[in-house]
Image (cartoon, rainbow, N blue to C red):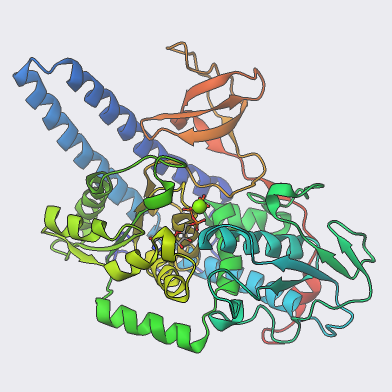
Length: 488
Ligand SMILES: Nc1nc2c(ncn2[C@@H]2O[C@H](COP(=O)(O)OP(=O)(O)OP(=O)(O)O)[C@@H](O)[C@H]2O)c(=O)[nH]1
Ligand SMILES: [Mg+2]
């Protein structure tokens, strides 16, 4: 978190900001960021056209440097504003209350009074893909379990990362109910009376329920939209919080690594996904690209806390990245273990040692103050989702070099135009206020790409004129659980 240690206002009793106030505050934060991305990209383009005019070049470089600083100071002040008048203490309390509410519901769902009679949803961990993808697969199962009010039973024997299964590294998803047995069985969706339903992977799911990601439950939607800038990521994070409770020996491994690596905050997390991913599903990005954003983060932090040690936790499946980073950026302290990256190579990826490595990397990435990575990788998206469970609202504590946040197999992600837009180039969308746009991505230069659902036109549009549409779905009520005292 960018520190605001000097802002300590207490929360007045019963103080809650309005939904509109918090949404507008976040729009301003995004607007400042998008404006600078737009201007700096335009200036860089102009710079390329003026390469034969050295005087103009140095003037443009000066604008780029000082403009970045203008932006950082405004962002610093906006961060302070988000803490003033009791907003900071309200947010802490609200985040903690909402998380407790959801964790209590998940605990009740997973520990039914009589397992032999409980409605169950069976999920097989062995999806043929990497750890990040498999964890997201289990989250999807868990969300469907919550949405269909069934206890999630996880089958994990013969897991490609660890033959002994999930419980060898993480605690079981239930203290009382892990048996898939039942009187009646069916494939998804089954009927209300079917006791045990088998869930396929999201890729082949037919009869998709409306509550798949990025949807959040209606009964907490207003509180969550007020609290958090990315409610869908917060919601997914709550499932990860419940699921990824380490077994004692896994916890010991993480603790002793934290000690031997000297993991300490403030720290930025970088995830560099290479090997099988590059050239197939994502582009190559040099370490300098990641470090530009790390520099920017530390320049902003220096406004509040000058002179901090610039630490970076560096995770990768390419063991050469860490030595390269240390050589090229000697004023940074890089923390990371090249032997972990070595085990992440495709040839040794599905081994016990590799599993420990990826658990540790995701854990430490999620504990950083800011993430620089490619959201095309599930590894970094999981770290971002878990990060949301450690802060009241860490929705802006990241910079992705490629995709925006998404969930594999998600329902449509839409934005709404707040203002009209007249295209200035042939590849730009025309927008009327209220138009719904299906988002494909952000180009991080002031423009996003997507489809205007009214005109069916595909193209670029200015990100600053848009607002996010939070997908709100009906889930079953958990009012009986909410009424119970904690711990029962
Ligand atoms: N230890 C470690 N392992 C990694 C790292 N990056 C990738 N890996 C390994 O490579 C696997 C990548 O597969 P997935 O988890 O499916 O993630 P992805 O390939 O980035 O994402 P998709 O292709 O979209 O599924 C991980 O699960 C790890 O086993 C890293 O930074 N550290
Ligand atoms: Mg993959």
